[in-house]
Image 1 (cartoon, rainbow, N blue to C red):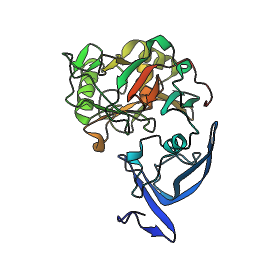
Image 2: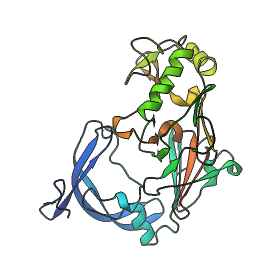
Image 3: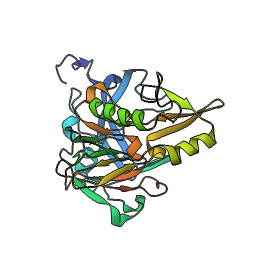
Image 4: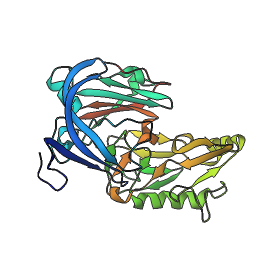
Length: 305
């Protein structure tokens, strides 16, 4: 066991501690068992058994989380072999590659395969170099002139190019400097939309606006801009208002909330969370150190080997 202040032992068990940029945390002890994961049966693996967690760590109906980051990130502080790496070492999965597809009703995880069936058009899958395959880090374009981000017809340049693709992040997180520039464009050009300007703006943390369904459709289809982000190699991420605004019902009210945020702990990177993952399927090719990206199919299939 690690001897750091979060490490040490409880009896004969090693402690672990996880902490996130949004202040969520979980801690407990490490345990080992045999794990069945889809068609990958009988994986000998170690994992964390949570004994204490923050209120915002996970929803009540969720029993835990499964990370797919690289082995260099598996020391918290005691080091273990991540489940995916353990499955590879034990030849339960043949290739160091997996495909993730997420839709509004669930999703699919294809282990050891580049699953092109979860893309709208397999001929339009683009591969982008991964700068760091532990974090699944890619880059915004830094070569072409002009801003890498566009809000409608307004270009925004970013000196921050690092992008981490993260299925464990709910929204699109951007550096605060970029968030403020995006907010300024919306407040300058789109104040006719209810709730966007004024003291209680959509751009203020945790605030949403109520709309009736007909009003919401008009706003989503006619009154707000498309946002684009240009990645290294020229691939364009395109987010329509239906992508970057989140709709939900509570009681008899219908709400819309902004699916873009900034976190104080991520000022030097973009986090591509589910605002993007719900529109684009991803192939995480750790063998070739590249990320395949393309618009997802209409729905995602079941988990595959």
